[in-house]
Length: 400
Image 1: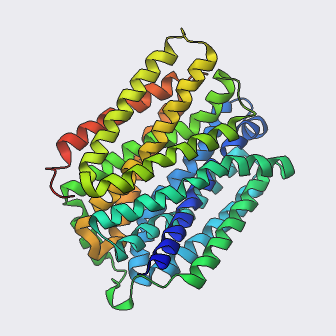
Image 2 (image 1 turned 90 degrees about the horizontal axis):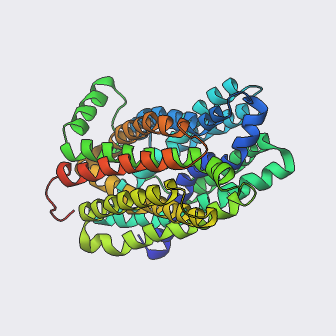
Image 3 (image 1 turned 90 degrees about the vertical axis):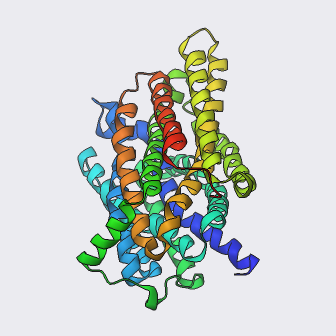
């Protein structure tokens, strides 16, 4: 693959991943308005607009990978994206919070295809540290979208209300699918496809589940994503209620996301030298220390509000940078032994990690009490557990 073709491939995979980012981060500025419109008596319930989408995505990943193994990567992504767009249209017309949440679950089901199958596409073409390096570049480009998504959401809301955000999702998905359809060759040739049979799927599932590194890596991913989703569920409310910066939230979120890009940049430089296990272990140690320090400083109530806000912003940058330093490496570690069933493996890993992360993130998000203390404490626990699993569950630090 030429350098120019590799760069375009990285950009396309980042765009496929961005379907998830805009579907989550683009909703953050809308949560207060959704709460006021659809759940005025239980404003915290509006957070479920985020986690319901993630739940649907987690369920959908269990099917997207096997379908892509049987019918090809491109066809599966195109069908899933079509389903995503139809569900987004249902969200646009949702009259109640309950209907909106059901439509968001369905939207997540469709979004599972570009998210999961994109990982399988990378594994079709790369492996080991090369895959980790490519994923770092993907995460680097991908970081730009979360930076812009809240600004996009706020801009669209100013024109047509929160419902209109879902029309933007449809437009983005359509443009991405047009790009992929015209420019990206199929990465899984027909002679490497596996028939969609129950016996074949169960055999592949057993093969995935017997690998200790895959299982441990998947649990670590669940803990990592739980910290992310809990933060995304609470961060807008923290900025609004604790720090009184609701109007400037999209700009601050963009700043945090751009600064957090340093995690992916750093990983792309050091992973080939240090190895994936060492990078993720050191990252979780750093996030644990940062969370405990922020908890002590902000929770003490001794600092002026603007200083506490600065600590909160630094903590958010570290938390989001963690994604670039860990998720690509964990995916590469987990996928290394199962390249011949990359679609099935990506599905099982993503499904377990995503659904598990939702179950862990919802209690942390709903514990919000007007301050960042529940979030900081929850992330400290999650990162501490991830650190323990890295040190004692991923095996010896050989070349990977």
